[in-house]
Length: 213
Image 1 (cartoon, rainbow, N blue to C red):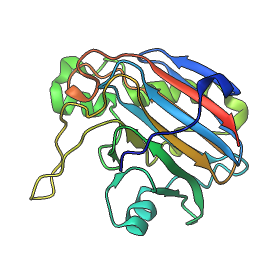
Image 2 (tube, rainbow, N blue to C red):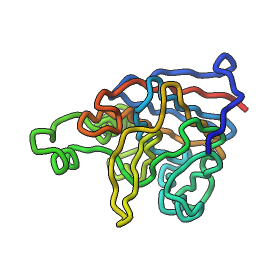
Image 3 (cartoon, one colour):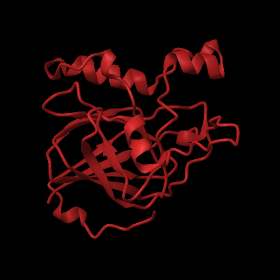
């Protein structure tokens, strides 16, 4: 559901641009509001969430989808953890639909879908692995790369239950805004995918903004 936010960036406590193909790893405290902005439109933000004080607890697509009875996320959706606790709630959204099923691009999926010559192209999994390597103190490892949300990404379901990758639904400046119900670590890969339309074949920047509520 489309819902505009009343929050103004001038009142934010934190703003950061994520260049195409880069990552963002940050702690968001309980009660803070996180906005992810699709700056130029038709860009995918592949995002992982962990409980900041116990990374063994993380976002669960299975529990979230089952609880809301919908594979897409938008205003009013509550992101549940692997312990079925509320992590974040979407409180504003100018896109209207976000993917929970498409997963993230990786060397393996690039080679299977697009050819062996695409295996070494940069991927979201590469970005996450780089973030983990550069922040060893957090205790994250490759086994912690599990369910993710693809904000702004358009992954229609076929009548047979298959997935397709289609042009994004977000225009320039569209955002999704979430209220944190617990302290969370947020790891975003600004998708570098060049082989399908999830990033318009031309990846572009994202902005992240934080407010203290």
